[in-house]
Image 1 (spheres, rainbow over the protein chains, first blue to last red):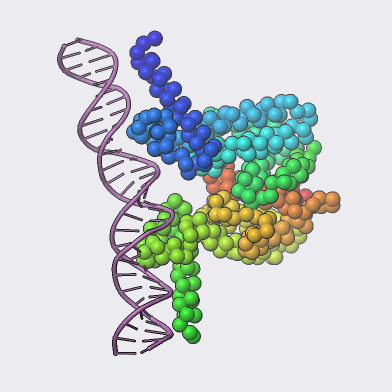
Image 2 (spheres, rainbow over the protein chains, first blue to last red):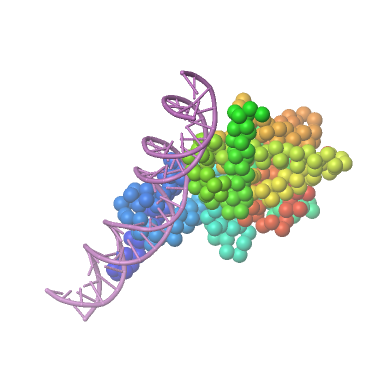
Length: 192
Length: 192
DNA sequence: CTCGCTTGTCTAGCGCTGCTAGGATCTAGG
DNA sequence: CCTAGATCCTAGCAGCGCTAGACAAGCGAG
């Protein structure tokens, strides 16, 4: 292996380490605790090293969001693939979605709430995000019914799931009725 | 008027000025630009004066949220009161809700996104928030249908509206199809 | 009217943040 | 071994939330 190749690989490793550390700190103490200084101390480098990888905190959040999108896409696909009919698929999808949001709040925020310079359904939407949304569309679009455009339909379903996820976590909705809400959503939106 | 009364009134005036200034700055430049220092400079007082009114930034956000909740409640009631049937009422409500969110992003964030120590459906939920949610329930609950609990139903509707509002503003959903999404939501959720 | 006290306000400061300039150090190639 | 360049760190700026302690204004008592 040539020397520049090794250097490049080490650099990529360190970049992954930064992103993983950021995600870890965010998971433990929230995004506010993710400071460049703290990350630098955690990985035993000085601050300017981090700035040589990422332009700022926004770009780190962005990197975490892209990682999370890939994870979520596989989680959704796994959940729907093992379900029987369309009705079971949509509830499985809803459970998987809300479960991911509940288990990884900072990652979910990075993907959908924080300002990480991310735009969806746009020409320069990064691939992992496109893929995660595709995973949603796959299961939801098939339930749109005759004469209903699958895309806006899936968007509304997604919005409902997103609303349930964020309002529950922000303690704007009591968490105990989640199951009933999912069933209700499936009944109405995904009526077969 | 007695002297302590006058002092108390002046103090209340100043408190309203602080909240109004915070809302103004947030509307113009976002919540990140709302710093105690900046607010103090804007109202020509020093920082400790602000801390004599509010324990910190959280409490200021909270005050803005409560103001906004009262505003939203009247906006929703106005919109639904002038609509004819249930179907017209739910679309009017959806439009009013999304309109409020689009016109007052920082206020909406203070109410539903930011950590302002606010909890809904809780014993110590402040009155304006209870009232805003009551305004939502009024119009949405009547569409639940037979054998469906109105409260969870209204919560799901609310979650869908919240999802549309936040995802659109965060540029996760393209804004141009909003009208179609509202119609779709009304068709499915509020089918009569 | 004057004195002491409460109440209100400000100045100054601590520790933290994101971010950057410029110097030190280490490495690879000649 | 010696030099050029890449790499990294020390040190610093401006701004943040928040607070301690100094200071002034206004009140009631004598």
